[in-house]
Image (cartoon, rainbow, N blue to C red; front, side):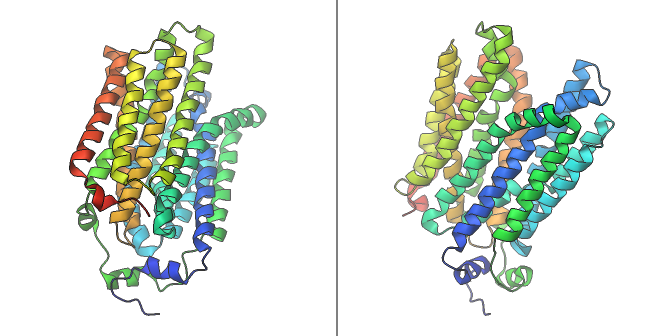
Length: 417
């Protein structure tokens, strides 16, 4: 098969596929994302309990080991996501996603046999070396879908990546109660195995020549070339700031709820409900962006989403009631959800076919960097004032809105019509 100059390998593959191929691919990456993200949160929320079962009795040491285990994976993933994205552009995204899911099956199974806290830390570090399938699924959804469905495809995958973690802890609590925490890791491994088979049998990249040789023939873009693409660096900063505001809730929200004179035995329940409200609102924002972006430019949605999220964070600064927190978190979550989907969709418009893995790897790395930095920053600010964390969120979101409005040209990122 001849590949004409200026036509990417991925475009040719998709053109040869049946008309409904992109819908099947969309279902595959959506289902795999939902199953995988749900499986991950079956056990991770209960990691402190598992650490304590490994012989750590001091509460401070349990917290230290838990923090290290939870932080090392996203930190390593943030560093390596661009590299894995680059490899995926050369050798195929499906192969890289399958590699990641298989490694998760093995690592989660091995974690069930851990006898020391450092065993868990080592395995979580190894997991960080092979993680990153979430960003690759976004790249697969973006490149498989027609241009006018790209934002909708990205939004759908992001929606299930939000809903999975909302359901995972509930399912995990039931599983842990039935079979125990150690055996729950095998259940998580089974979830990843199911996700692997979904991708293996349902996702099709098309019948093409070897991607590596074809990519070399066309002069695949390197990291520097991808970073120089219009607005990509700005979009990385946008996703970092949105993640910063989104994840700042984790270390301080229960403390803020407790400060509102909520009875001690109700703090955990109220905090859980509020987390679910924020996650659900973000999922709605992801979904609505996919529809709105057909009529409004991605740049304007980012500005509007960041401004809306800033208003929600501002409500958290001034409110002194649970209903006020619920309203503020609803607005904050919806704005962040819409803004982040628009940012990925905007990247999809400027990234040429065949470079989506590298570009989305860079974007995912920026987002995960926000995830890694936020707990430390929020914890330090909370020493001064819990509300200071929400003030920082307002400032970061307003900066995002202002900078995008000033420097991102709407015509360059027109509505997907």
